Image (cartoon, rainbow, N blue to C red; front, top):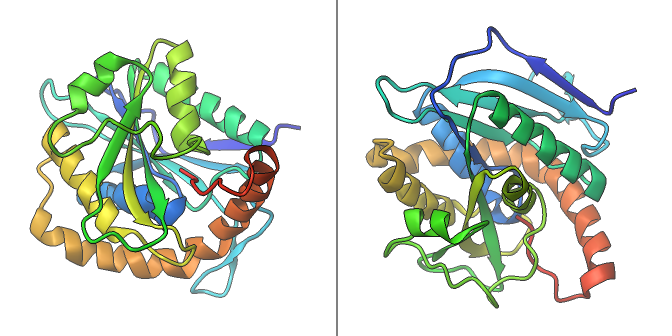
Length: 265
């Protein structure tokens, strides 16, 4: 029996050289907040719903007092003309084990290749001991060409020594993409490393970078208001279950890397 269930929603769209942007729960939920905002702001359409035995063994209780399985969703946004389309990956959880994380990453890259996409952007947080006043955004990638494409005064590419291993989907997607000759870059924003802290400031800084580089025309005046609405939903939902996944992963990692391990993408 397969441990993965991928349900397609609606007809398969025709996309123009799509770029994949990933943002799943992690430190400060920086990536998740950013991608959830993009899905809403761009009015992206849902393409797939993914459930798995590799997700945390928990369910949510929704507003109707019914249970929901943890889920990861894939959305798409088509643009008119020759502009590159987007595939947006968001959801409630990450896989809790190493094998599941690799399998999931490969399946997402399979989806990207089905649409002839050749570029991946992942989003995450860097956990600090204190709340940063103005979070810095760092980047790393699977080749120097992709870093040259996206680096500017808003992004620091001197990441070596700043973080340890980039754990989770935000790291694996970039690493595994290289085997398929897919360019990959990860944007990581500083945030407070406490499990109940939501790194909205870091998410905003990443969104500013994406808006400039991808010409998304985000309504920045709406940004703070919309993210506040996203915040209440995330705190009421993903912190319950993503912390289960995070603590499981941290226990595994500390056994390998020691107690200094403090970063989950």
